[in-house]
Length: 291
Image (cartoon, rainbow, N blue to C red; front, side, top):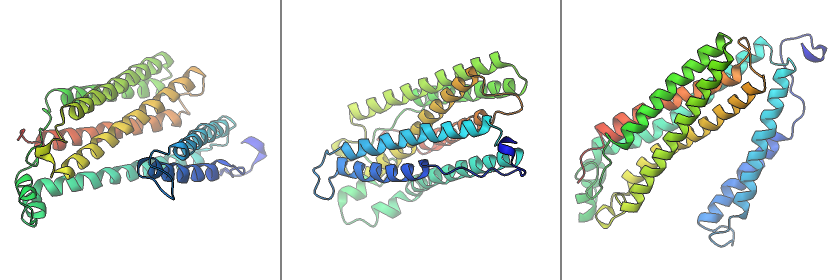
């Protein structure tokens, strides 16, 4: 082991990044509220604190992960430490699963009990009429067999290329890893571009924001949070894979030691599975026909 340590555990050196990351996250959150709504006497649109917080978060990510890579290459990530890293990544993905469970829950709740929850209990005729159907009256739903289907094919294909890269890594085929990662990154970027175009079409044609759909905001909120936050995960996963590609080209990975890449592959497969549920239930099963 590095530094002459006689046990299998790695005692981390004092680091400024947890404190900086926490402070930056607080600045980012408060700055976002100030930017969108105003806070503590600041005018709406004051974005400087948000920018400070985001800058701090990005710096924390870059330098903290740089230190972790240095620790790994110095031999501090023993088999025991690697098990801990795997448990940490598993728990992180599990927490992400529960986040999406919350949005699926509200979507299913309103899809199955929309009339009882929002319609029958409302004293406003327009609200009762809007929630008499699912999707609510006035919402023009997206045809799942066009852009959503294209994105499904893109993500499923990217899952196969990520698996190809992973198997190539275990076999020591660096060219296979490189091209598998390149293809996965391209497919992830295409998914993001298609979803951005889908959102542009939704907002441009006012499917969720027209006067007829004025009383159905919960549908739009759950739709955009579930699909938009998934799209954010795809973007983060794509950046994760780009970093893995750069590390591969720098010679950081070997068939015996490549947990950084392995965790990226886990994360990408998680993103794939979540999208299959989104496509099946949000777009197809409960998407319904346009009203």
